[in-house]
Image 1 (tube, rainbow, N blue to C red):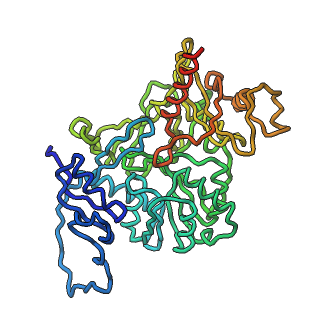
Image 2: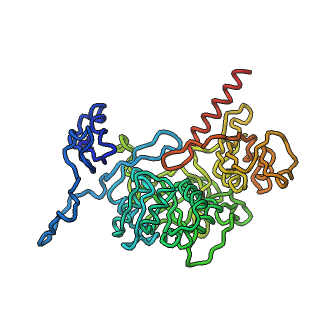
Image 3: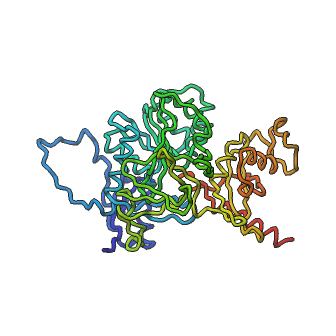
Length: 467
């Protein structure tokens, strides 16, 4: 495989200084700098080409005739290196092929019904696979694109109203921010224009789905499950369709599914497979629970700098790192990340299962379940909790009925809440830690579980060293 070095940098006006910095700090191969803005910056002397005025429609003369152009491209060659979100560690560069991006875009057009009539708001960054693949889908469909430099709820709502936006994609944090702003805003025009919302990067709570329907009543709301290594979406699920009746029940999304006389662990339903995807579970579990594997033309070529050793093909199975099962209706259920599994007293605990239950409590604004070292159990299950503004946290023990008299949370109240929902005893957190500040997240809004765990472990060690 030939070594490839970057030779061109394309920036807008806000990043025009990057060329000099990158060229000086280790990328001497850079030869071309293309600016998408004006040349008023003091760094503009380094620009080889400026696109300013190139797309002025008044200066473009249509050709008298069109000639056929033969494009040379390798459909299985890399079109882009896209980085993972780095939820559990350092982000990885993923080499994605032309064909993978094309196939994923076609799947989104088919499932989400994107068309040339859509006006699409780029809420997600183009440096991440969700935003990139959706943008490509809209480009192929012939839709109108409206870009914003960075997501901010107030600006997004203003753009939706001004441009009559019909479609957008989100992650749960974006949805929460939009809903929070709209609660204060009152009547708004976007409730009539928005027809399609695709959510990724995590599941939406039942309450958040209900509020989204309230503020976007004409929108079909879908959720997708995938990752950078699979060029975005493996599965899709319709959460709400205004053309059909729909009942919001928590057990439809977070359940312990029966299989004869055997009870499966709780999981989160992520829907059915995209048209091009093949998926199976791999494990010795008699009820079908195991590692989720996938293969097909959507797979990455490999990780950057490891392409030769990690090269994938449509015939080889890729381990997603997730654990789950496929039910009798063909729906995929996620139990948790294999790498995030907590080993306590010889039993396995998947944080996502516990978090899904606790997030249903009306006083819980956010929850991260982690395992910290413990001599007897190997790891102890701990819950880091963010309490809603109108609720109180108490370190004292209370009667179990106290929460009925006042908006109060405590270790015992939350443990009893888990028991009432039939969560197995070893999965219930031994203790809860009130978290005053927002959880550290990635650029796509996913909580950095590793960072939360590291902070808790460091704090515990500090206390022990001062005893």
